[in-house]
Image 1: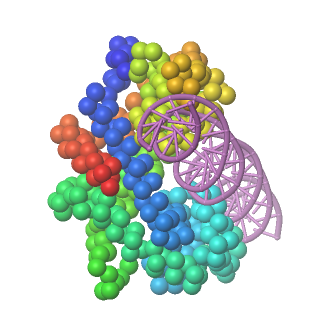
Image 2: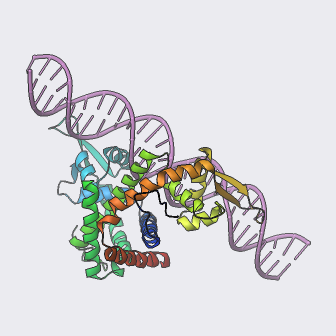
Image 3: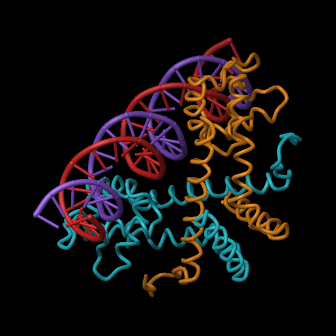
Length: 157
Length: 157
DNA sequence: TGAAAGTAGTTGATGCGTCACTCAATCGGG
DNA sequence: CCCGATTGAGTGACGCATCAACTACTTTCA
């Protein structure tokens, strides 16, 4: 991609482009591999898993839908669609909210608890094998700082 | 998420989990923001853009479909679907391959060239604003090394 | 030379994820 | 008390992405 002299914003250097493309590729392949591996050992998708993690991390085993959206960083429409699919598979159930007629709670079912209990060990092992084990603790910490900085920047944007 | 003493693979530490979840969130938000911004200033999706980058980076302006899949790191079925959509919008066109009756070439059209020429400056500016400008050159280089290492690991897996 | 294996690419089904739009309920101000 | 604004959530349309299955062609081997 040649440098366009009419631009005020310069193109990325060749090295920057290489790193950027590799990052995009890493993320795609990582997500795809994790999704395949979790699907191979359970009936869960990564999205299912994320929702169930949120619901099993709280003592009540339930959360408001908007709260789920915030914690997962998902659009509400996405949460709604995802929960509909998970509900049809018996992983979660809905409750009306007594204090707010507009909203509802979603809770994890026993089937959902079993599903994530089955899936979690393998998933964590995958994350370790594919990511964590290739980095020293200091590298992972430094990487975490970089991620935090970029996340702050994008949320401030 | 409690430690399961029966497991040989330990859970991630709280800090590792935090970094991991933030990484997933960063990727989602970054992809979504880049996709929104490129869609706001052109009729291209990020996937369209990726394909057009590949096709305009070569002097012939065309490539074998399997070659595209390799370079983009996409499944062939994905490439196929994507090219079908792009072809229906006049961004690319297909040619039979004289040497291999099984395969075909895909080439960028003039409309495709115009589309990516329009979209590229804004897209690069977005990548700079959201990512590159928040890191020093050394940080970006170190980051690139980490990405390379993880990519090698996942591709070797 | 022909059959088997491998390769290139396509298609349909389906889950995912965003966007625009909608509806119902709540809140706040006049 | 009423109305407009806001909020919580859901729905449909549609592009994206994977998977399984398929077709057509090429290569390999006996």
